[in-house]
Amino acid sequence: MDDYPVLETEFNGLSRAMPALPAAWYLDPAHHAREMSQIWMRNWVYLCRAETLEGPKAFRTFTIADQPILLLRDAEGALRGFFNTCRHRGSILCQQASGMLDKPLITCPYHQWAYDLSGRLRATGPMRPVEGFDRADHPLLPISVAEWGGFVFANLDPDAEAFETLYGAEMAYVANWPLADLRMGHSYTKRINCNWKIFWENFNECLHCPNIHPELSALVPIYGRAIMARRDDPDWAQTASETAAHISGGLRAGATSWSMDGSAQGRLPGLTEDDLDAGQRYVTLMPSIFVAHHADYVRSVQITPISPVEMEITAEWFFHPEMTARPDFDMGKIVDFGILVMDQDADACEMNQAGLQSRAFERGVLMQEEYEVFLFQDWIRGQLGEPKLSQGVASRASRRAKPKA
Image (cartoon, rainbow, N blue to C red; front, top):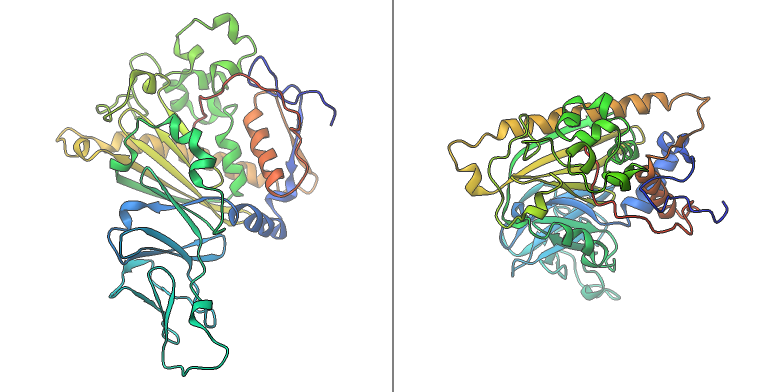
């Protein structure tokens, strides 16, 4: 690559066609294992909501890639994370998905080694003392944990860079949403026959929107133009003062939220007119979750790889308790719209994956509007230690309006 900028400087877009990732990266089991090791085991991954771990001794178990994880509240109610592995001979410690410990000890069901809630080894069951063994040398193996707005994340590296340091700008972007006060009203899980990267790539472009999402394109008219934001148009400066939704990127006239009829059921406390101007604000926390913020609710979508050609999404809708207590509250028109759009995306992703099976297809090509797909793919390259194609990228206009999904 020469020094010519890959990204345009006057608008959001690629300055030239760029090569996509190799097709084999969406199919090959060995490469999938590489991504699990170098991406999913090295980044902050969303696990659950904080309110699902209420009070000291509460615990939940998870798997990140193929790694067994244990989350719990210690005696002071602080969140702690460990590998769900006994230091004796490696047995799983907690076999249940969730629960409450009977006492402030984590006891291995195999040989009865017991650890306190800070991870220190306190007892070795019926085993007699032996020369060369010190309990202090065998605590549970810790991982890093973080809470943001009631969302709980884990990083398998106990010395990982702080969550707040990495994602402070994203957190500030939606600071007025009362995330910690919201509670889940509905959950939807779906298996999709595609590689996890295909879902993120679909999320990061709207070239498909007019064809795949007619209802969403009617609600957010700029999507009907196959772009995501005002500055995706090379001629955006000529219409910079226009506020019409198909130019500015907001919701259609009269609409106030993402729902079947475009109406919001009130407004979450603390939000300003500026917060609601675009109709939606997205926080994207690679590789495992995005969170869509609206006037009356918040929706999260968790991405979980299953195999090179299969993944799972879990969408959760969060509402303020005062809103759901109202007799006129209608969750259905919100949830139904979200499921409609996600099912459309799932069908498109499966169609994409099926075509990648072609032996003759080595890699795709990214066009001007697919700048976010390019940036995602370059992030993948960087995570894997591969040369990035965006070295020397010039700065460009703000692109805060995020795509749909």
